[in-house]
Amino acid sequence: MEINKMKSILTKLDEINYVLLHHYEEIIGYNIPPKQALVLEHLHRHSKLSVNELASEMKVTPGAISQLLAKLEQQQYIVRSINPESCREIIVTLGEKGTDLYEAYEKIDQKIVNEYYSKLSPEVIKQFEYAVSELYTIVMSEKGSS
Image 1 (tube, one colour):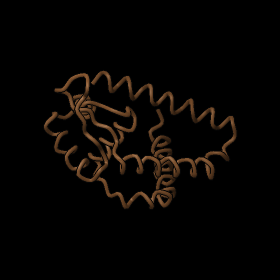
Image 2 (cartoon, rainbow, N blue to C red):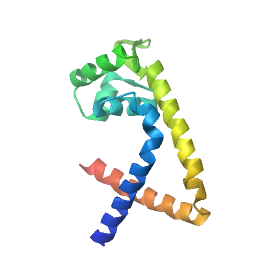
Image 3 (cartoon, rainbow, N blue to C red):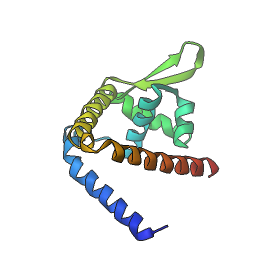
Image 4 (cartoon, rainbow, N blue to C red):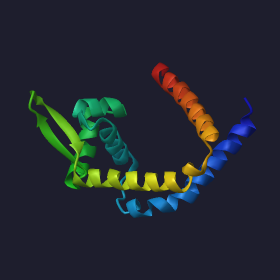
């Protein structure tokens, strides 16, 4: 593998992200610490998770996740409720502010696609999709073995 070429690609990706960062200014005001943002990301992807499932996803203890959830719930980013099928289980979903945050992300992502990615040729998009899929497969297989 050509390490210098990969470093160059990663540098360009960082530069692209830096230039596109201004699009996200409207959601910077949410000021969510990284671990809390990760909780919200898991909930956004899964729509609802139990406290234990969320702890497992994040590779932390249920006690540690409960502390994060308390802060997020207080700020209305998440809602905790008792599972009607198992009264011992707490289900976590996005709250009003969490939903608002992801709606804002969706609008920004769509704007970026319209302004930039839509200008790529179908062939380049196909190559990009292939490269990202290959990298995804490698990372996910490595993640599973660690």
